[in-house]
Image (tube, rainbow, N blue to C red):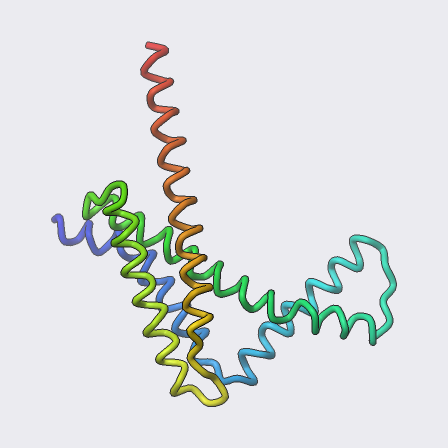
Length: 165
């Protein structure tokens, strides 16, 4: 029974790993097109919200200036979600707490980030970047921090409900 529960607690992390792997299998043109499409939508949405008319040149200039930060935020987001998912499994199934939870979660997720960048060395028009592993690590740390804050809030709420009895 315990092994089935263990597999279920790791399922969100495994799903995130598959999603990350799928993004990494896109060749350079596909990957760039995906982020360019997102950047284009963001610029169009922001212009519509602010009721600003942009010339095609202005729009292209804005898109060019935010394209790389959007790509890097994508890295941070997907690895932040992986950090949350891995922390959940380590906390629930493996009973990791405190620094033990932090070190195990960072270790597993950073190792996956390294293998992901290595994998990209074999994808046409892609490359493995140490900077991307660093950015992924920041995302993992932020996700793990979010997980810990949620745990602390949950613990405080439990303590308050016990005080009211």
